[in-house]
Image (cartoon, rainbow, N blue to C red; front, side, top):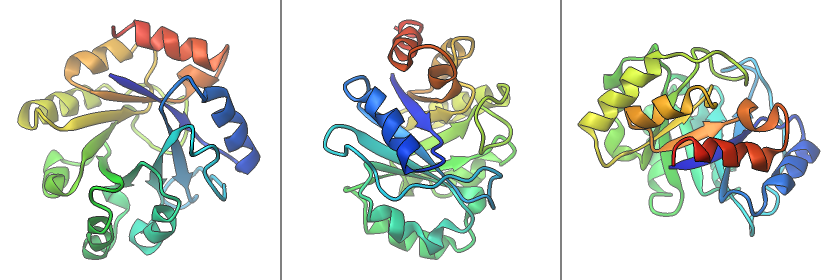
Length: 210
């Protein structure tokens, strides 16, 4: 089970400061890319710091990602997540993603309101899937949406070899339930950064699923 800190940077300085605290603690971080259109939040950064010491997931919470995905591919993250609800031109998107197969991992995500078959249609085109532990994406600290447990169980049963990542409301109260349902990768924001030491908070979460 991998726990990945989620970063929602307002600027490059904030991103660099938070990443620095995580060096040597985790192997990956997830950076939320928010445009203020697909989600209400907006993030801003120019590059990915300390790439020789840590790997990045870019969670593209942006409208029509097919129009700008090449810009994020050029940043050379380890993984890219695309929310299917945000896509307008699927052909254009998957042509771009096909070029990076085997180089950058591709994750596809749906909200709990979206039927499972929408994701299943494209599941052969991705390396992992991301399900949401919250009802409305784009900001940290939201309450847990337990509908995700049924989605996790479904995909875990139907696609037992698929990596299932869960983003949102991953904390000490939900982490065991998510793991038991079949999640294999957990993305946490508030539970790591809201209070206390980030490294100690990660260690505490890990201890709950050992």
